[in-house]
Image 1 (cartoon, one colour):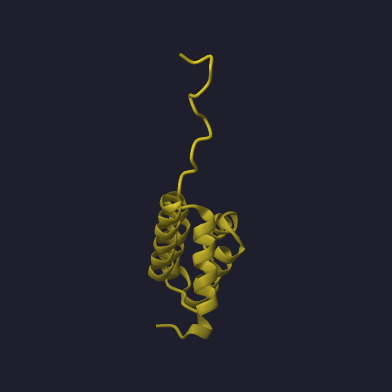
Image 2 (cartoon, rainbow, N blue to C red; image 1 turned 120 degrees about the vertical axis):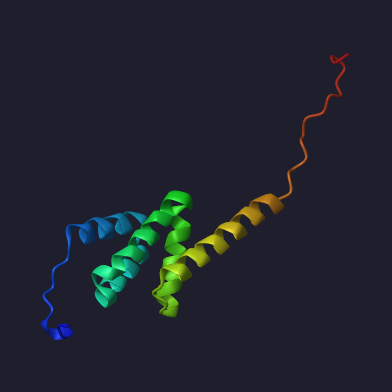
Length: 114
């Protein structure tokens, strides 16, 4: 086993693709993925793929908010980001569902209507 100081730095092409995809989601997402890669190296790419993949199922702004929350709390784990995105999504759905529908201003009360 090589000591960390003697390991060669060799980012793969996938790392560049992942960071570019994270940048498209937002700056906080890229910062979180970069932090994961800096601390874990190539094994951290699996978590990075997971975070980037969340934007396929959930809105990118929610993924960005979750990544900002993770960076703010210094929790650099995919499971935490996923749980935060799911919670934010459920709150957004509940907020949309709880919005009362305005009463329709249309009435069928006119002299020309029989």
